[in-house]
Image 1 (cartoon, rainbow, N blue to C red):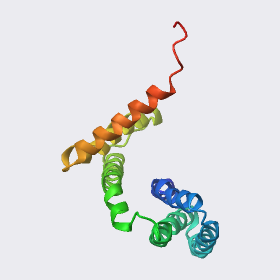
Image 2 (image 1 turned 90 degrees about the vertical axis):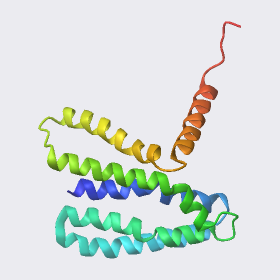
Image 3 (image 1 turned 180 degrees about the horizontal axis):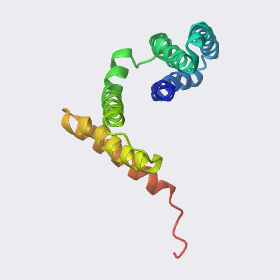
Length: 168
């Protein structure tokens, strides 16, 4: 169970780290310092409470600290930039929804279909998780277009990284 709580926190890390990168690139190191100090204080307070519940409480405290501080990090990261909170929310809605669907499907799968062997569980989880993540993209309006754009970006990135053909 505590691994699930850490997984919830880790699912939010890319988003929260985006805010930190924005602050650094804008030269707002002082704001970054204060937000990270606030994060440490909130995490410490939640950790003190969570310790009473053992490893699950510690993991829940970690996840809660990350999730609780998303709103102020969003606000201060985009303050004074052309990007507003609404445009950010629109940009991350499909990935967030897909992550929630995938996590729910995998949690249900793990509960209803116990698999004894870890390797078999991993293989099944990767297959089922991949399908569960892609389905919202394919079923929701504009999802296919956004997914197609991401795939094109990945292809372009791969093409750029290939070494030049030496036979020429």
